[in-house]
Image (tube, rainbow, N blue to C red; front, side, top):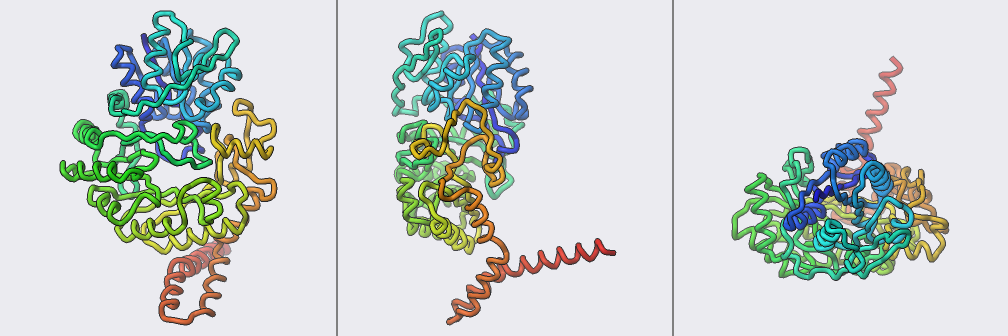
Length: 488
């Protein structure tokens, strides 16, 4: 029985980062191989993000079963690939992942070529499903799936999450062609690979697709076994840089300290990147992470408005954000802060609070701040709010959708933004552009000159000038010289 697992990637202009090995498929592949099945993985780098090439590779494998995973940004490409492969092969077609899981019934009703949707994690479900298929038995009592029985969609009960994720084998790393991956650790030129020390997150942010997928569960690996995997990847594949993919690496203090101490005790001499929450770190934990090789850290802060933080159920406050970023900067981390605008009931005043915070953080060294517009993902509370407010009339995840204005603001045009009737995303974008313009910053500088009352305030003004005014003057001079050269 030959199984091909396919990572369907978005269009190239939607990708915001270098492709990395799909760990989810790697875990499923290792569980299938343990049952004796032949497995191959068709990942994005293997087919150079070309659906035509992906189709050829799948057909060449002559599979009995094909499993696809896709995000909402790649859903139409996945559907196209499913249809093309199904047209010329008699394979069992399985889909899963963060898009198909919460839209299982709609997917099966809309795309006749899909046979089964795997909901939740697939390490146990997929081998059981393939085993039943190989001997011609039905799927009626397999938990964690939705499937077609002739023209009827059957939704079986969810499969309970495995609390002991140490039972799972390492991803089938031997199925990845690491030479084709170009992902590097932030702030370095070191090739990096993703690893997971936990699954899920206990928080319930209303916009988070992972909350919809894993139901706010949190399960931790044994720190020793996790570091065993890191040591294996270092010895077998020469990796010295790692991207810790956990939703929140620092959620449980004993977990992160256990991992750091394992790394230090083994003298691994590695560098790594972690995602954290501002309410789960302090200077002691950050110092230990730094000593163990963490060079870069990311915080999902989302908003500078206490009102919005509360309404999106973020579970943090602005004081915690300021303390975490300040401590991280002083310890020398490369910091990425992420913010979201256009949330439910957000006003321009709330957005100003967010950019006040961004500009405050810009004074620290090695801090990068990113903002985006709120995107609606299936199964999230944000999707429910949008539907309750009739903001997605006649919308279906499986009907054609393309919003040009989403692209103009830097968002994926095939995934809807959350947009209030009272405040359009265009109005928000214009407000941000005005606020972030050089003219705005110069006006702020002039107003500060008038308010100088102490030596400290003078130093702050000089810092402001070095950061904003001088680059603006240099840019203006460059433009003037170009105009003069064109006249000659």
